[in-house]
Length: 61
Image (cartoon, rainbow, N blue to C red):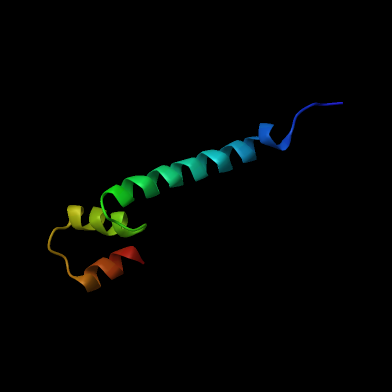
């Protein structure tokens, strides 16, 4: 009989790593007074400074 557990599975490890990364991102954004998703808008603004809100919306779809 195999002694492996669900925690040994690749799927579990990937889910755990993803959740850990998400928690680190939330902590980093919180330190900058940003909410989740705002970093995506900032990245768009960094690429195309001065674009309008409607331009940002079109780019995000």
